[in-house]
Length: 200
Image (tube, rainbow, N blue to C red; front, side, top):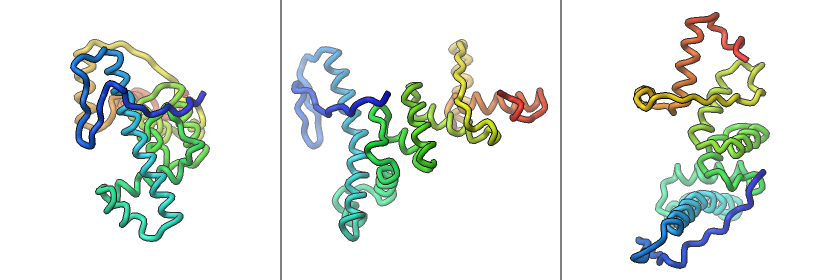
């Protein structure tokens, strides 16, 4: 179920300035954590705000990006990315429980697939990297299996094994879950027929 957008307020105990956040000498842990969550929401929301601002500019004013670059000091490609996501995932289809980056992961997909992946990510509480890995894994499957929902697998490993695997994933420049899936696929191909279509 999609969450209602949250109001973005900064704690009354904190004072905000253009270049600083001034906190009281003593702040309860829970209030400090809430403040961090609000700052994250504002940071994440600003990408949407800039994207929507640029889309409006594109539809209403000429020379939108040149003016936007001058006004925001952001580079052209960053602004184009914000506008691309905002234009292709309009407000009514956005998931407030997910980050802007989650939406950026699916923006190149057809609209029905965007909605499906964003829904799964919200239901499963996936990080952006987990969403990316799930999409890549689904794309690697034969066409006959692409419509099937991913199956969750849980495993417990010793910390030293996890560090070893994470190091290997880092060297391959991929997410740990993606590295595990790729490694298991290779092992299955060596052990079996090498045909991924046999895997259910």
